[in-house]
Image (cartoon, rainbow, N blue to C red; front, side):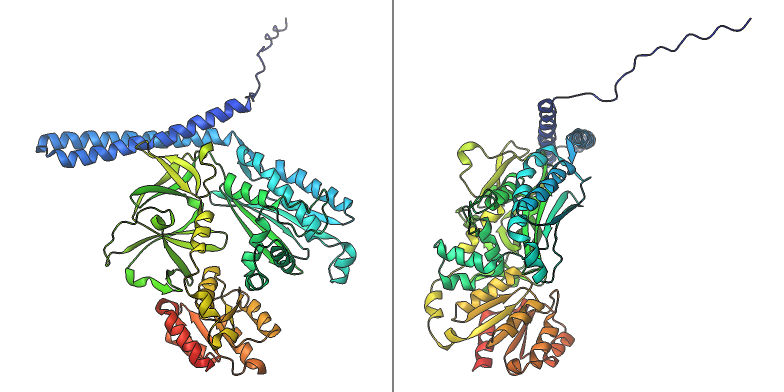
Length: 558
């Protein structure tokens, strides 16, 4: 007889996923962040224990017992630290979402908007698989939509205009993302006409933001920054797409203030514009640097800190009535953090080394003088309480291991406050007196800080200054209008200073025009090459003195 069939294997079918309400997940992430942050208190207690061990003056046996206890406690704290960070990272992954959630509807919106405006736009996307915290994803939609609408309406030209400019009739919008360490960089590029810089200058004059002379002398980077002012729009017609004066200020506020990121703009006339947003992967826990200034602790987010320097006082230069330091071939202004924050500046020994925190916002850098570095680590960035949201210098709060609330400083606001102190007494009088008031100088340097510092020195003594951001830009401006003198750096993109000098010398208009090279290159062969290509003077940035520059320039122009 055949063997009986085995009984069927009856099992309950279980699901591989579980639905969790988003508020519960948010509460879990928030709680994990607080646990990681509060763990800093254990590290603080461990440091207190080591200090206590040194101060008690124990005998050999008691000291050995104390050291053993401290060693075991340290091992336990570090092991717990690793477990908690791993648990927090795994919990955070559950809230990560791909950028496709934002990119795909934004691309469809751009195509539909282009059709409604009679334009043909091809939208390309890449990096949609990169994941961000849902908190960032939710807040990222509005900035990207604003940028896309402006790119389609202002940037991309109508087909007929593109054909006349030698372009294909259809425009191209590229929305891309890439990962850069613990950050994500989102680029939005269009191949349109670029930002209308002259229209922006004219609108700033019409809105009484500055005089026509100030607008004409404004560097391109500062002209671009004007579009982020509230209520600023160059559109001649108010429609449902643009011209209402809203949008770009929303973008800046969302990216820089709300998302703790940075926003940079690069524009080329006739070639297009690129908006770059650099964002952290998550706002749950951020890398924080704690410093002391004026006897109080302050904090910076890691993405705003470029470099930490400890330099002798002799390396500080006096440029345009303020201190500066040469960092990687560029002049960086130096400001005392306690002074910027209206805190008492503690007495310092004149021969003591200077501790500097170099911060950056957009293309500008500032070296902040601090009293001490306290700590650096991952901390929970808490939003500013409602009564303090009107303070422009405070971006958030963090809690230290001693339960002390520390203000996280808003770097763009610090840069603006430092810039307001740039003009020094007597500048207007000096600018209107003497023969230099009629002389025009072209300053060529790829560093925004260096260009502005050299401009301040020259304008304070009556020169009319035009800025160029690289060698190619400098050559174009030199050939477009005459200049009485040229100051140039050596290491620049597109065209270096040696090539620029040699090219200008071949032009009859600049055969005898004074050209001064200002660079960080100190080798004799570089100095010889500078003189061979036609430079009249070679100044090393590390030995820079504004009096030396002015004397050299005056003697060459005499």
